[in-house]
Length: 551
Image (cartoon, rainbow, N blue to C red; front, side, top):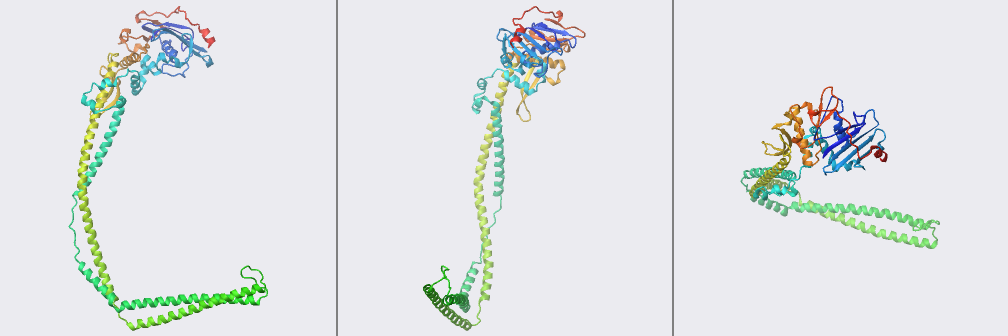
């Protein structure tokens, strides 16, 4: 892109019409507040509708005007000459318009000319690029760098290195991130396996105690025989059995008597009902609760009489059962009495207590020996586990070594691609170098960074003038790699007296602004040939008033 001519009116310092023609080197010299930087504002406003910082909310209309416009003639990157007009009214936004070659357009239609807002501002104004964060500067450069062929760089690796890694879609950063995650996971697995191995070693070092023997089984057997004899042959056992039978008979007597009492109560109730039916002339039927006639009374009284006969039979039956049970109880009691007071229970109790002690001792020995058996089995299984743990550790360490090697190769590949990018960038710069990554010596890790140096010195160590010329080279480089080729703005050039800014050094248009005390504004194609700006008699192809009327 090459700027040819610009005129403006009602814009910042310029209330009246102002025109300027651009050369390869355009010097704008004058005192403070004479409108030097306004020319740079006008160029940016024409393309972007913003100020030099990209702010589109700022009012740039002259304080004594209601409207402003900028008309800019330039040769685009397509090699064609274009005329761009931007008009803005202070109060009526509907009157605002943008015109390109006589056609009304929207802001987005200009993007194919200025490519990107941040790019345009950074390529035109080195001070804007300087104010960006390092990450923003890096991303901007990466965005417009030509694509580096991953496959071409990959083929430069040794064959053994190529066989070690597979990077999907050429995304090295993602591959490194994913592989580092695998390394971390593998390291955690190794830590766990080492913990398992330490635990297994402790088990293998455990002391195995000697199994115990229970040698009192014969005593248990003899006591059991004695107890069996006492319980089988003694009168006590017979007496105990008779006493149990006697207790059962006593219970039967009580149960039979309870049943008999219920039958007696039921019989009394039936007898009362029967007498009522016979004696009461208004007796009611016990079933339907209706007054009964003579026939009904006969039937009802007969039913009651049969029920009383049945209860009488049951009464007789239970009286006989009670009598027989009482007789059986007397017989059993006499038998118990005849056996006397013979009692083996004391000896049997002694035997039971001794047997309990011996059985507990036997159980303790059994449990102890069972524990020893489990320990021996656990040790045998642990020996097998240790073999597997050692094998797993060897595999994990081998896997870890492989992952670390992949990281080294990936970082090497990443550096090779970075070097290819740096080659492209640095062919447009003279003293400035860019560093995209750095190696951390303590860990060997390749860390992303973005450092700009001038003759080996980092930008933070440079003087103000050195920083500016460094940023100027960066802006020029952005112009070249993006193909934008917008002029380079050198504002406050009086601050850099040791530098001679020439078109030949940048192969790009230069707009050089220089402040000189108490000087009126002057424009020239060289610093030595400063002259007053005069109205350039160039007639525009497009009539502003006609465009305003149409808009």
